[in-house]
Image 1 (cartoon, rainbow, N blue to C red):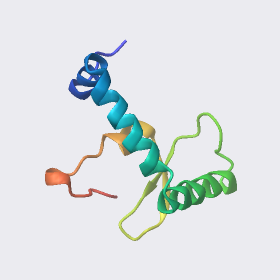
Image 2: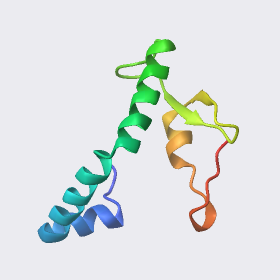
Image 3: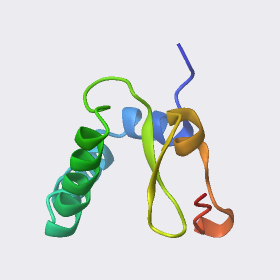
Length: 87
């Protein structure tokens, strides 16, 4: 099992902070923009017949297209100073 990240360790040892984060995350992910975003990704996965468990991720390109990519590559891509490093 992999070691917990620094933020995971923080939230595990600070229940008040974890509750505050959970409340924020719940409200953020229930906004119309996030619902639409998830809906678009889910419909694209269904069209490609990769919905459900497995099948890799759909990665957003700079041109706005969705391309299939391994989860490890898609989720590991982090931009310098918070900038996007889309394919």
